[in-house]
Image (cartoon, rainbow, N blue to C red; front, top):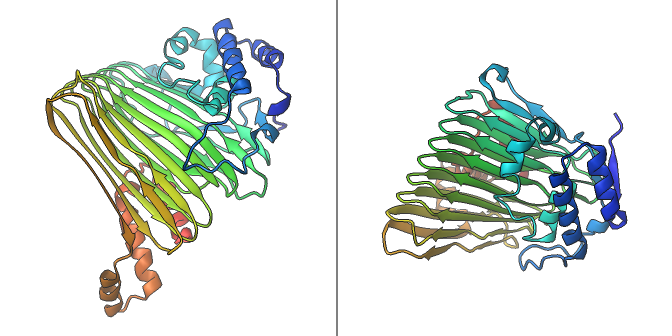
Amino acid sequence: MTMKTFPPLAEISDALVIERSRAAGEPEWLTEQRVDAWRFFASAEPPYWRRTDLSKFKPEQVIAAADTAATSLYQEEDLTDQGVVFTTLAQAIHSHSDLIRRYFGTAIESKRHKFLALNAALWQDGVFLYVPKHVNVELPLTVMFSMPIPGGAIAPRNLIILDDGASVTFVEEYHSVAASDQAFATPVTEMFLGNDATLRFVAVQTWGEDVYHIGAQKVRVGRGASVEWAAVNLGARVQHIEAETALEGDGSRVEWVAATFAADHQNLLTAPWLRHIGAKTEAHMDFKTVVKDQSYTTFDGMIKIERQSRATVSRLEEHALHLSPKARSDSIPGLMIDTNDVAKAGHASTSGEVDEEQLFYMRSRGIPRDEAIHLIVMGFFEPVLDRIPNDTLRQRIAEMIEAKI
């Protein structure tokens, strides 16, 4: 199958964005959003990120996909009778336009920086998931994004909506084989949970070695609703992901874990932001990082407890393990509190090499040093891997971690 593409970004115009949108039969409100976002992208300067190296990134040269060839959906049961909608966003924009318009772009501001605007202007890939009231989807629903052409770009747009009392497990995966051509992914995922809804969200990034992965994720959580969020970051040359959980409803909660492993010259940044808005909200965040060779990672995490929130419980932790003397990890946990009514809140960060006493003990039991390090790293990541709902995916991630050790 031949994939449709846009011209290189430097050659795209307002007129082309309008032409492609109308040719696809998109509603006028979406065409207007695309053009507005494109104009912002075309005029805005690249963001200056102190800890994300974009010095070798040439976005004007990449060729963006203009169809959904990079999107693959997987489900193990027919959910049509339950009213569940699981399809590409490009298809859903025709069948569920009013519902999409109500939520689309309301969680993540596309003009935060030019790469998010690029997603809003040119997205073609992506998934739409809607789970009706009180429907429990037992088996995981998965979307996998690939890089269909060397030196290409994709702009996946995912919209997840859970009505009151609904529950689902959603897996978002980015994967490609190693390639020498620079490629670019700018994904955006917006998630909305109604009252008492439950979302288990798994995001896995295993791009090839020369992909720039720059995007955003956000979930808005209603009253009594809960999120289990697990992220795994192993691939890409450069990653800059801004992720946010907004606990808007009273009694909402999140359990958020992540595993990042950087090697060679990878530059991987994750910026999780947690906002407590409703009363009696609860959050536990535990991020694990391993660095080796000359890689560099950044954890830029923040808890914000708003003035109207009260009786909040919140904990943020990040722990980094260094396997090489030239590897580097920056940990920047933060806590902002605008209320006096907090039950418990705190953050912590640790960073260090493998414990030599632990290695000595393991070697004294006949375990070679390399194998001991292997066991320590796998044990370090185990709390995150245990959150992966699919056995095959969990095993594949474990094998990729083992190969990097």
